Amino acid sequence: MARYILSLDQGTTSSRAIVFNRQGAICAISQKEFSQIFPQSGWVEQNANEIWASQIGVVNEAIAKADLSASDIEAIGITNQRETTVLWDRTTGDPIYNAIVWQDRRTAELCDQLKSSGHAELFQRKTGLIIDAYFSATKVKWLLDNVEGARAKAERGELAFGTIDSWLVWKLTGGELHITDVSNVCRTMLFNIHTGSWDDELLALLNIPHNILPQVRSSSEVYGQTRAGLLGAQFPIAGIAGDQQAATFGQAALVPGMVKNTYGTGCFMMLNTGKAAVDSHNQLLTTVAWRLNDETTYALEGGIFIAGAVVQWLRDSLGIIQRSEDVESLARSVPDTEGVYFVPAFVGLGAPHWDSYARGTITGLSRGAGAAHIARAALESIAYQTADVLDAMQQDAGIDILELRVDGGASRNDLLMQFQADVLGIPVVRPKVTETTALGAAYLAGLAVGYWNSPEELAQLWKMEKRFEPAMKADRRNSLRMGWQQAVAQTLYKKEAL
Image (tube, rainbow, N blue to C red):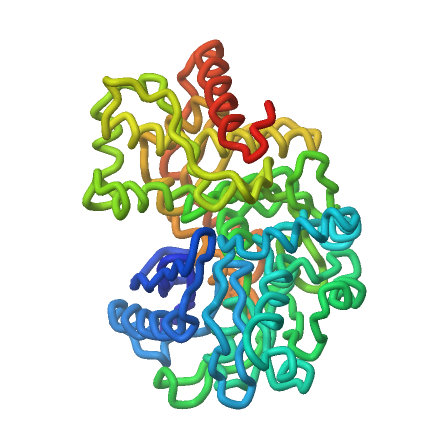
């Protein structure tokens, strides 16, 4: 009797559930967007209960679409937006405040204080991260300091902290499990990636009590069962990974030196560095990729805060497209941007600049510029930001990257992928299954229950759909990238030259 793996892909703007078969092919997919809350400039929140409702809703839809019953599911894998922070009451299960999203910048000033107090080296040495509002630690501190009664409840052990994976597992198990995995916990800015444990010194520095923290588990093991009565049958939750680590696993980038880039709301590049935690000298992040069979794999990562979200902005705020898919045809209606550059620093700039106070700019406008030029510049901004990260990554790792594996929603945009290959000067390779984030979570869960036997078996399932070869001449590439660098220099908060 055929069995299947169910992947829960809880993203920044939507929740999805995907059913995979033994060949790693999609049998059914269901997706639902949920609300984004912007209380003030730079603040981004979500309703954690709405996230849960959207996620459990698409689970039932996906199983029905595949013409299956819950008893046909072998295991669940979970992948999630990382760093997004939830605090909830252990007794009632209710969040004490909205989830604070990874994009949120409200704690930028606190991060500045930590850096000016000389703590930057301490955090980077222990966590592999740069002190930034992006990560969970200062969000937790803000919640404890600003939600009435929160700190007292936390001190009494009445609250639980989690990133979205922890929240989903708590809900799926009816509050029986309060856990996370290494790929998520390493993004909290509270976890020592070398010792593999929560760091008491960092917790004390931010005045975060240990008793609110989830238990840290590996990325592939049977954690527990879904609660009775939730889905019609009980089955194991057996894989957890943050979205970018899951996408790397789903891309079968399992060998040191392999690199992938995911084009989602943000854009995230990850280079497998194997058993070595490579220190970055170019403001990239040293992070845990996953832990399998008691062996930790590390990676270098560069995060871009705004990628696909710039297309949503063109749709929702500027109104020049009706659907996100329309951006490619609009951009193709002009041969180039006519010198227009769009730096979408809506919530600051991530790697390799890490400027929390930068805000978006459009430069090079002339009387002849129109909606199509802005749309094309918006797409090209995704490729330019990716190129900046790849340059930094090659310098840190001391290797020449020969190809870039791509996935995520915007990777289906052929215009963007060709331009990406052109500005990088290396091939860009798109797999047949671009839902690699969900696929990676499915693979991790399947390995834990013996559905697949080994990572080597998974590597054989990866198949190429299209390869984009660079076609742009070097002088043109260099000229375009110089223009981009100038646009970024005008965007940075202190306006310093790069």
